Image (cartoon, rainbow, N blue to C red; front, side, top):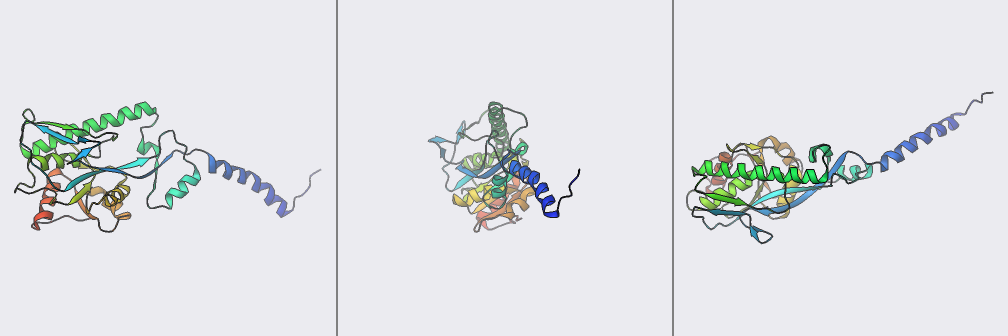
Length: 263
């Protein structure tokens, strides 16, 4: 014998599995990472007591100002990110929810990811050195550059490494500093021919830059929109596509002569 349920009873019965699904979803791990602004480091100075850039085989110059590379910090690949974590990240300007595969190589173990990030950093450093020496017309066989930055992986510091090498060897080309004495931050990959590439997490990196005193931020041109989304007050964006363009923009910023790109 079948018994017809009243409407309230039907809603109550249907609500039970829905509530169970929502409760499960709320606490189930999801394939996302939550990122926030990370550390910055002045490539013209020291990191943990060791010079970031060491050059031999050529005369170097004393610099003023800072060139700060920027980072983000993301939850680890084995960290459980749940729905409440994601909701909290979506509503905070100092957090970003990103697909885990966009932060870490898919399927790799933690050790493999660490090795991958170290390898990317080494490739980035080599490309940055070749790009800087190529820009300066220096022979890589006669000038040796050593780059050291502890606990940082990935390729996104390439542009700042190249600029740091140029500033230590030539400055602005007129006897002054490429920084003009300012605290300048930025991000961007670089190839050996000086092409600047996009990175990701730019809106968080601008926050890290401003927090650590930067007033100018060099951003890959393709990521201007992301950089403007949560741009801190007092931070000027300069979009770049090449190492040569970045140097020219900094020279124009210092001298007041020539165009300075803007987003």
